[in-house]
Length: 297
Length: 304
Image 1: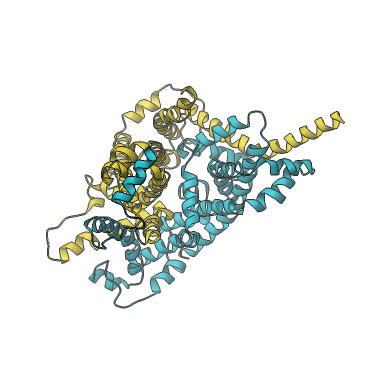
Image 2 (image 1 turned 180 degrees about the horizontal axis):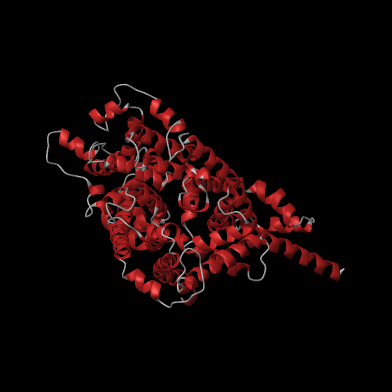
């Protein structure tokens, strides 16, 4: 009897283990194995095919002396900071506006969120068209009488990042608004009552009480948005193809081009390893705050 | 004491019931003004897309992109669907559409089956090390895809799937796993364990509990997962480019090739019709699913 039960239990566990095989393979082979493989081969001189000729940090030296990579990193930092600041502040502002017991809340939400359902390719192509100098905003303002008006961000190396930003914000702010609104709705009604009893004006309550209470929501949003920014690729491909020249290059594009076009795998591996490092810099402090902090405190 | 003051203040300062508000107070103008201006920003591209796609090229060259068409024509739509060129192929975006459908259906089914069973095992049938794997899985969601692109090329090549539809299906299943597993695990953990125990006492095993009890109870979360996967896989560009060959390119990739091709005269109306066509599937899902979509992305967002 006991024997039978033990066999039975083992069998049940077997089923769960069989069910978990895809997860185990994904985590061990693809996530852990793949990552280590790429990091390892970033120290080789692999060209068309991966090969085990180790050359130390040469690929990284080449990477960091390549002007295209440096432009990519600079672009990503500028775009990243602006995008974070604007998505989070606009998202919060809209969430606060939506939280005022307004009419047509569902309509406004539908309008703000639909871009998020669209791909970055669609987003990039639409905004490429709207910002087209011959037919888009520039030409319309000119036809209204302001003949010298110039707004041609996609063909101006200094402004092209802002062109991307307009499109990126269009796609993503509605989503951040939803996260923030969920955060606002999660705050205990009693806090509002208490603030009202104490006669604190609404804007002050938001700034001094609600904002600090929403810290976890802000941190989660920050991490999600930041992780998305580091992967930024499709939008740039569709909207500017990295141009004019190399003015809107981003790291993900550099990786793809070196791996699959220029047949210089080692460079691609080194560049993708740098991307991983960037994510870890964002992720580790967050993981520590989120999970490490709880255990200690 | 605190209660008493609260009650007193409420009765003093605030009459019961909702306060009648003036419709045009400064506060309201500010709130609705902000929302209205932003709504214009969000709606503008959709408007421009639709309007441009309904105009002929002469009208586009003459007029302004925001104006509605003087003469409505559906020719750009027809052309985008069945005649637009990518390279030497001139059979339109329909090819990309059907490729995307052929990629989408098996990817959605496989990824959801794998992840839901996995989430189920992680909730009710924990085994030694299962939580460690789950943690790695969630952290894996943050690893930039670029790091894993090439190792997967090698794996698929070894399996003879590189460049094929099933290779891409496998990739979507792998990268959908973290978020979907989390989604299902979180949902299953709200189901009372007594139910699960009762089923076990009655002699139901791993698969029969899943199929006969859990799945029928969890239809809403399956719908959320379907929404999440359909929009995510349909909108994918990178995996499509890397893991398929040109004749299997999904719609997004083909769209980008059509619009950003350097040869020939640019037909902006056809381009916008093509763009809109590519966006139709996720837009349809979005408008039909309504609040479930919000729930899906919120579940997708709140990791860990």
